[in-house]
Length: 251
Ligand code: PGA
Image (cartoon, rainbow, N blue to C red; front, side, top):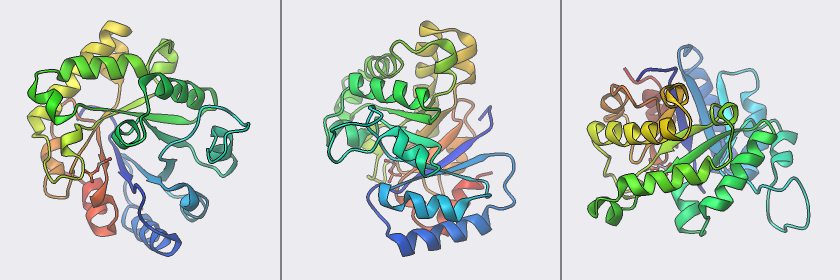
């Protein structure tokens, strides 16, 4: 860990108004003393407005889990960056593996969303990560290259600096199998090398790269101790106030 850590939770398609408000009220209290790291929760669309409202003035950021790239139009069922800004959302998670693999999102679509988020002053977190089969076939670097280059396509250096990357090996998501701290560090190094080739060392070194995939209170310290791991993206373990607080307060 070298930069200001970003500890984020991804609620996925869980929670309701009552449980969400209970959770963020508890987190707000538990984390009020946290000053040296950023805290962020990615919340389902319908819960964004009440959660933003509850967290106003706190040190916890709120993000959406997806958005469409157009500002408005005949796109039934989609949510635009303007909708997010309208209710005070400041972050957006893009290209999560469930979006890629369950909903067929391509690198091209994700790139459009990244550009749209940046143009709207939303802060994007771009997820990348390989499937188990790709890891076993020695394709980690190739996959990370395709997804990173795809996501950052045509971004200027100044734009690239505003993006956060989350490395989430798909085989570690929701499976209880965490990448070892060494594996995570190695993959993050590969991503920095790709960024250095695309931009320069400054962009590569300053990029915040989060690790995600079965992060829990009992493995977060080891992951965060690695020099290339700048934060976490936590699914299941972000739904409980005590567990997520422990993760935020890694040592
Ligand atoms: P998990 O999910 O922590 O439940 O593995 C991580 C994610 O999908 O962001």
